[in-house]
Structures are given as structure tokens and as C-alpha cells.
Image 1 (cartoon, rainbow, N blue to C red):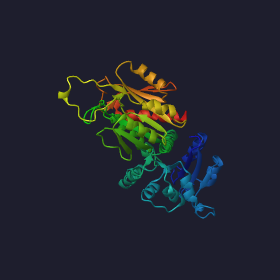
Image 2 (image 1 turned 120 degrees about the vertical axis):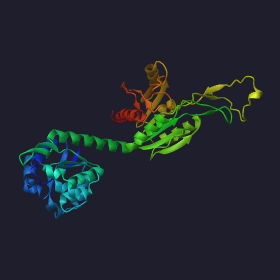
Image 3 (image 1 turned 60 degrees about the horizontal axis):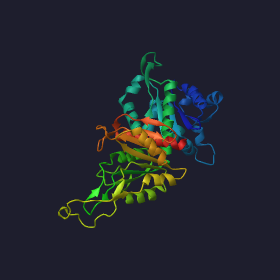
Image 4 (image 1 turned 90 degrees about the horizontal axis):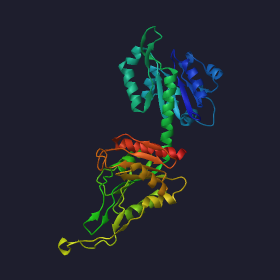
Length: 402
């Protein structure tokens, strides 16, 4: 949590005092915390108590009227990486769910656009009331996470659902939410180019040389990256798949067209994921007219190498760019992947064994071994291509931090 900024909201409850020890834990973990007290919270705890036990900026309704150079509640809302309410009373939950802003805490909460967390605490009858459950559902739909409540001893002297979660559970939830904040920020800064499908090299105006790639893996990578907030350009070679929402699609046919598109779009990107199956050879001289069977007892076609797009791009990449290759192999899979990783100067590569019928061409599942130039080796289980894509991207993004 080091360096993270948290606004800790405290509402009126017999559990309000527990927020003080939580504040100390957050500060010990390296977070910068500011505290906001509701008017009813101040019936149980005071600003002075918080400041004496764990020095921090503490706000209440008096700050509405304090002369400052800015609008206090808006500045505080924008400052926070995370807003967390501990404890969250039934009253605060109800008002927050319906956008009511009748005190400094609720006004600041309403102005917060970042991530939010609530830790409810109340009597079990209040918690289980249909109105409270409806309000909780509304907040969850607004991407507000709930931690608890748990079943335990209540102030009324009996055990039931409504007790505030313990400090360890709250800290774990906050840490997880702050990881989400980091990932969201990092992904929004990323600009990816993903290639998918199979290039085609014409023999004549009708026939072509190609391969069996469906493009599903590349489309899965594009979808996974976009879901995390990255900007994604998908260069699609001869696919029949629906484009993921929010992804820019650039259609191409030949290897030469793919090379041109990659060079153009990778110039402004951070990461290239080369999932397309590129033809290694093309006819030296494609026929300009249809080759007719009756005119040839035999047909000899001279094939020449196509450009090695991956190697060309990897050699010219900037220090702030990463290049990820894909290799479909049938034998000696890992050794073949290592050779390609080294020879083409890649940052990482995903290798799959297409001889396995469970993960072969056009399958909805895949299994890859991810190798990095730094020596990391990760093998995924057989799972959906979207799940494989998510794991691949997690490995790739970590390389930016290394």
C-alpha cells in the first residue's frame, strides 16, 4: 500500500472506534490516509481522538465552512485512490445509494469517481431488511464493493449477521482493491497492437497459400487487453470473427500488407502481440490469370521467403516497447520456442503444441508455455483462449516494471 492515498469515512455506530486501529494499520502499511467523520460518528469518536492516536488530516461538517483556496470536498474526492467506509451504517448506505449529499462526508463520497469500498455494521434486523438489501444491491451495481458483515456477537448481546468484519479481512480487501487501482491505471496507459488470423499469398487471382489459423487466439488477446482498459489495434488477416467491442480493426490479406500495418501502428504502441500465423513462403511470380488444369500436366511453383515481420520489428523497437511472439509447434516445442525467442530478439514468446487435438487449430481452448528473455517460464493449463490471453498479458505487463 506504500504511497497509496485513502479516504477513510467513519459513520455513527458502536463499531466507530474500530476505525482508529484500522487507520493505524493503514499508515503502518505505507498508505497516506485522510479521515472524514459524519455528524453521527462524532457522537462516538472525535477528531481530536483520531489526531492524537494516529496523526492524520480529519474532516467533518465544519470543513464546509472553512475558508480555503479550493472546494474542499471535491479536492478530497479527487485526491483519493480509494474511498472506504468503516463502519458503514444503514443510514449512510441508504443515502449513498440514492445520491443524497446532506453532510460533508456524503458530499465527498458523491464527488468521488475512483474505487469505493464499504464495510457494513448494524443490527441483523436492519441488515436483513429489504430496503437495506436493495440499497446494497444498488451500490454494488455502482461498483461499490462490500466487505461483510459477518455473523458474530452484536451490541444487543446475541450472535447474528451484522457484525463488522475483522481488521485482517478489511486490510486484505483494501489491498486487493488497491491492486485493482494500479492495474486500471497501468492498462489505461498501454497501447497494444495485436495481430490475428492467417495471411494469404496468391498463386493466381483465385488460389492462395495459407494455413489453418482461425484468429481466435489473437482476438482473445485483443478482447482481454481492451477489457482492462488498454487501447488496442487488432490487425486481422482473413478472419471471420466478430471484432471485440472498442477495438480498432485493421484488415489485411498478405504478409506484405501485415508487415506494413504492423510497422505503422506499432510506431505509437507499447506492446506488440504477434499472434497471426504468417506465411513463411510466397510464390515468386503469382499468375496474373487463373491457372487452368488442362494446360498443365504438372505445375512447379517457385517459393521465396516472406519478410520476417517479428524479427524486423523486434530489432528496431524502442526501449519502452515490448514484442511478444507466438509459435505453433508440433515437436520439441520448448526448445523451438527458446531458439525463436533468442534469434529474433523477442521479449517473450508463447508456444503451443498444435499436435494436441484438444488445443489445435480452430479450437476454443489453448495451452501455451510463455518464455521471457529474462528466463521466466510459465505453462498454462488447458483452458479457454481468453483465460490464456489474460495470463499472457499479465506476464507481459510485469516486464514493463522490471
